Length: 167
Image (cartoon, rainbow, N blue to C red):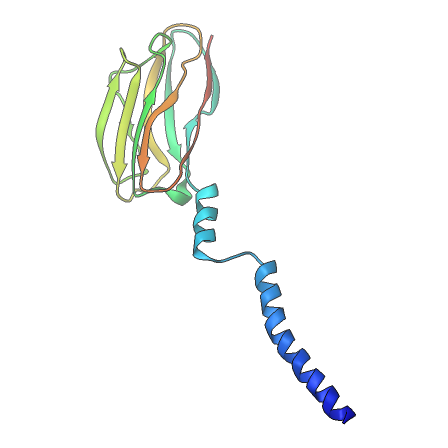
Protein backbone atom coordinates (compact mmCIF):
# COMPACT_ATOMS: atom_id res chain seq x y z
CA UNK A 1 0.00 0.00 0.00
CA UNK A 2 2.83 2.35 0.77
CA UNK A 3 4.26 1.96 -2.76
CA UNK A 4 0.92 2.82 -4.39
CA UNK A 5 0.63 5.93 -2.24
CA UNK A 6 4.07 7.10 -3.31
CA UNK A 7 3.33 6.33 -6.95
CA UNK A 8 0.07 8.26 -6.69
CA UNK A 9 1.91 11.25 -5.12
CA UNK A 10 4.57 11.04 -7.83
CA UNK A 11 1.97 11.12 -10.62
CA UNK A 12 0.10 14.06 -9.05
CA UNK A 13 3.37 15.94 -8.52
CA UNK A 14 4.43 15.23 -12.10
CA UNK A 15 1.13 16.55 -13.48
CA UNK A 16 1.35 19.67 -11.31
CA UNK A 17 4.89 20.31 -12.52
CA UNK A 18 3.77 19.90 -16.14
CA UNK A 19 1.19 22.61 -15.53
CA UNK A 20 3.11 24.94 -13.21
CA UNK A 21 6.51 25.09 -14.94
CA UNK A 22 5.23 26.35 -18.31
CA UNK A 23 2.90 28.76 -16.53
CA UNK A 24 5.66 30.23 -14.39
CA UNK A 25 7.99 30.49 -17.39
CA UNK A 26 5.31 32.29 -19.38
CA UNK A 27 4.47 34.70 -16.58
CA UNK A 28 8.12 35.35 -15.75
CA UNK A 29 9.27 36.00 -19.30
CA UNK A 30 8.61 38.88 -21.67
CA UNK A 31 5.11 38.67 -23.00
CA UNK A 32 4.60 38.05 -26.69
CA UNK A 33 0.89 38.67 -26.84
CA UNK A 34 -0.16 40.73 -29.85
CA UNK A 35 -1.46 43.63 -27.75
CA UNK A 36 1.82 43.78 -25.83
CA UNK A 37 3.85 43.78 -29.04
CA UNK A 38 1.82 46.70 -30.37
CA UNK A 39 2.26 48.73 -27.21
CA UNK A 40 6.01 47.98 -27.08
CA UNK A 41 6.38 49.03 -30.70
CA UNK A 42 4.58 52.31 -30.20
CA UNK A 43 6.64 53.12 -27.10
CA UNK A 44 9.99 53.42 -28.81
CA UNK A 45 9.52 53.56 -32.55
CA UNK A 46 7.52 56.52 -33.76
CA UNK A 47 9.40 59.74 -33.11
CA UNK A 48 9.76 62.95 -35.07
CA UNK A 49 12.54 65.34 -34.18
CA UNK A 50 14.19 68.53 -35.39
CA UNK A 51 17.81 68.58 -36.51
CA UNK A 52 19.69 70.28 -35.01
CA UNK A 53 17.84 69.70 -31.77
CA UNK A 54 19.33 72.67 -29.91
CA UNK A 55 20.94 75.80 -31.34
CA UNK A 56 21.80 79.38 -30.59
CA UNK A 57 21.00 81.19 -33.82
CA UNK A 58 22.55 84.51 -34.79
CA UNK A 59 20.36 87.41 -35.82
CA UNK A 60 20.14 88.06 -39.58
CA UNK A 61 21.53 84.63 -40.60
CA UNK A 62 20.10 81.74 -42.64
CA UNK A 63 19.88 78.19 -41.28
CA UNK A 64 18.67 74.84 -42.58
CA UNK A 65 16.36 72.87 -40.31
CA UNK A 66 15.51 69.20 -40.89
CA UNK A 67 12.50 67.29 -39.62
CA UNK A 68 13.51 63.66 -39.18
CA UNK A 69 11.75 60.39 -38.42
CA UNK A 70 13.53 57.62 -36.65
CA UNK A 71 14.02 55.07 -39.41
CA UNK A 72 12.72 52.04 -37.51
CA UNK A 73 9.08 53.02 -37.65
CA UNK A 74 7.99 55.28 -40.41
CA UNK A 75 4.22 55.36 -40.66
CA UNK A 76 2.81 54.57 -44.10
CA UNK A 77 1.94 58.21 -44.55
CA UNK A 78 2.45 61.40 -42.60
CA UNK A 79 0.89 64.83 -42.63
CA UNK A 80 2.68 67.44 -40.54
CA UNK A 81 1.99 71.14 -40.07
CA UNK A 82 4.25 73.20 -37.83
CA UNK A 83 3.68 76.66 -36.49
CA UNK A 84 6.38 79.20 -35.68
CA UNK A 85 6.72 82.80 -34.56
CA UNK A 86 6.86 84.79 -37.84
CA UNK A 87 8.23 87.82 -35.99
CA UNK A 88 11.40 85.92 -35.05
CA UNK A 89 12.03 83.74 -38.15
CA UNK A 90 10.73 83.42 -41.68
CA UNK A 91 10.78 80.49 -44.08
CA UNK A 92 12.87 81.07 -47.21
CA UNK A 93 11.08 81.14 -50.58
CA UNK A 94 11.75 77.47 -51.45
CA UNK A 95 9.47 76.47 -48.55
CA UNK A 96 9.54 72.87 -47.32
CA UNK A 97 12.01 70.73 -49.25
CA UNK A 98 11.12 67.07 -49.76
CA UNK A 99 13.20 64.62 -47.76
CA UNK A 100 14.02 60.98 -48.42
CA UNK A 101 11.74 59.35 -45.82
CA UNK A 102 8.89 58.86 -48.30
CA UNK A 103 8.58 57.99 -51.96
CA UNK A 104 6.15 60.77 -52.80
CA UNK A 105 5.28 64.10 -51.25
CA UNK A 106 2.38 66.49 -51.69
CA UNK A 107 0.52 69.33 -49.95
CA UNK A 108 3.64 71.47 -49.68
CA UNK A 109 2.65 74.67 -47.89
CA UNK A 110 4.09 77.59 -45.97
CA UNK A 111 2.88 81.01 -44.89
CA UNK A 112 5.24 83.55 -43.31
CA UNK A 113 2.37 85.82 -42.23
CA UNK A 114 0.52 83.11 -40.26
CA UNK A 115 3.71 81.29 -39.24
CA UNK A 116 2.84 77.88 -40.71
CA UNK A 117 4.77 75.27 -42.70
CA UNK A 118 3.47 71.84 -43.71
CA UNK A 119 4.03 68.80 -45.87
CA UNK A 120 2.53 65.35 -46.52
CA UNK A 121 4.45 62.22 -47.48
CA UNK A 122 3.59 58.64 -48.34
CA UNK A 123 5.10 55.50 -49.82
CA UNK A 124 8.43 53.84 -49.30
CA UNK A 125 11.51 56.00 -48.94
CA UNK A 126 15.12 55.25 -48.15
CA UNK A 127 16.03 57.65 -45.35
CA UNK A 128 14.94 59.46 -42.24
CA UNK A 129 14.57 63.09 -43.39
CA UNK A 130 10.89 63.98 -43.74
CA UNK A 131 11.54 67.54 -44.85
CA UNK A 132 13.96 70.38 -44.54
CA UNK A 133 13.50 74.12 -44.79
CA UNK A 134 15.64 77.22 -44.64
CA UNK A 135 14.90 79.95 -42.15
CA UNK A 136 16.15 83.49 -41.82
CA UNK A 137 16.32 84.97 -38.33
CA UNK A 138 14.57 88.35 -38.07
CA UNK A 139 14.49 89.23 -34.38
CA UNK A 140 15.95 87.96 -31.10
CA UNK A 141 13.81 85.49 -29.16
CA UNK A 142 12.34 82.01 -29.39
CA UNK A 143 11.11 80.90 -32.84
CA UNK A 144 8.49 78.82 -30.97
CA UNK A 145 8.30 75.84 -33.34
CA UNK A 146 5.28 73.74 -32.40
CA UNK A 147 3.18 70.99 -33.94
CA UNK A 148 -0.01 72.49 -35.30
CA UNK A 149 -1.33 69.31 -36.98
CA UNK A 150 -0.07 65.71 -37.14
CA UNK A 151 -1.78 62.79 -38.84
CA UNK A 152 -0.54 59.29 -39.68
CA UNK A 153 -1.64 55.65 -39.73
CA UNK A 154 0.12 54.77 -36.47
CA UNK A 155 -1.33 54.95 -33.00
CA UNK A 156 1.16 57.38 -31.51
CA UNK A 157 3.98 59.62 -32.69
CA UNK A 158 6.13 61.54 -30.24
CA UNK A 159 7.53 64.86 -31.37
CA UNK A 160 10.71 66.24 -29.85
CA UNK A 161 10.51 70.00 -30.21
CA UNK A 162 13.75 71.98 -30.64
CA UNK A 163 15.32 74.45 -28.26
CA UNK A 164 16.31 77.35 -30.46
CA UNK A 165 17.16 80.89 -29.42
CA UNK A 166 17.88 83.77 -31.77
CA UNK A 167 20.52 86.03 -30.24
